[in-house]
Length: 613
Image 1 (spheres, helix red, strand yellow):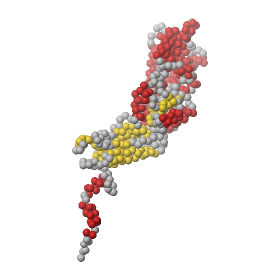
Image 2 (cartoon, one colour):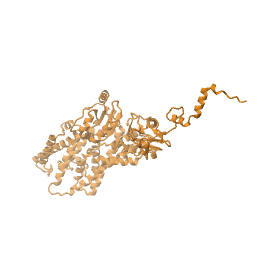
Image 3 (cartoon, one colour):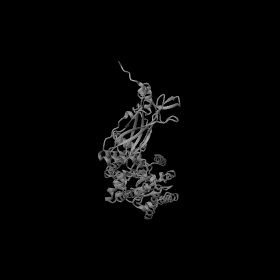
Image 4 (cartoon, one colour):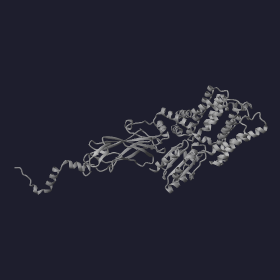
């Protein structure tokens, strides 16, 4: 006979069995959703991070994609979200070696929610894109990007509490000698990235070099050379080029074209050789122009060429000088090539962003073969302007020759060339620099000197064959005209407007910033760097820029001449060319790096971007 236990003796056990049997299973699911159960919650969302490159090199840009899979029947709020809703957002970490730029969220689908009305939501699969920069001084070692995804999952009946999901992405930082490949292109094709944070062309070239797209790198370098030829840095070469080819009366159009090509080849070869040599030694490209012997040699050539334009001597006298002046005067292909090499040295300080990236690439990879041809291409792009100038300068001989027309042209060219000689000498002979001013009275005096000088110079005559007294008058006139022209050319290079309070020592500047808790601007400049002077003259002198930078510790570091200090700073901050401006926080972390000239408007945008971080 089956014996039935007496249930009234075990009331607690009976109650537990009834609860476990009767309580609906869906209640356990609801509790699980809110984290009240020991069971693992049902997964509503998963996220995984992807990179656009398999490896990332210091100083390069890359992109991040966070791919989110949302469970069927669930959705999350879009970004931006509806009023009062919690948006889906990627929270970026604060890393010393990585700066994050644009974050691109997809457009949400509109959903009519009974309790709040119409609201944008995400469902199924979405991709969030992020622009990022790896700083130049980032260590060569693996690192992890610890992102977080903040979201709130909902279905048609309820919304769960907001959650934060970690998204860890491994980042392999390698040297520039390693080959980098683009990956996950199908994923990134779905992200509508706008303009990259770095818009001066340097990032594009760096990505092309690091990504193995050599053909694109050559194209960008060639375009960079063309743009460089349109900057004030190469203006001194224009009168020199015109004078060389314009004085060649017998040259036909075809010969002028060929001579111009040979002249540009001289520039190209100089750039290629000097670029590889200087980058290989880790020096700044333009520092060659800080050597007094180099500047003196170039100035001597220019003065000699200018005096020959005035007719002080003919290129047939004496015999030793004749051979030199025949080449310098551009009467043959050898002379055109020789003057092109000198022009290449004169243009050496024109270190634009594209050239800076190329020099960095050469210096860090040791690939001198590829570096030589990249420099060759850059200089060829810069030389296109001079091919045109040299070709059509030869047509000056076809202008009317009545009176002393050609003598007038030669005298003006001579004044321009000797003015350029003084312009280069000012960087090694400080009195020439110290008396320059950027003011209306100074320019009025300069204009008076030019006008009086031209009147005294007897432009329709040459030195040879005129009386001694006339020669003395002409010499005084030329000196006045050259002085006035130099005052004008040099004066406009001086800054005007508000002046920043500069600190001229890096260590002292960083200590001051740390003590006062201020941001730091490091401005790397040199007296031979035309773009550096443009920054002083146009950007820092702007009242709005000066007002913002008044709250910074502004450090100006002189790279005019090579020294142990400049070598240390070059290695520390990876300075391949000038100008370079680096913004740092009080702890010395680099926030932004600029290569090349930026105008006041762009500088204000950069400062606002830095201060918003």
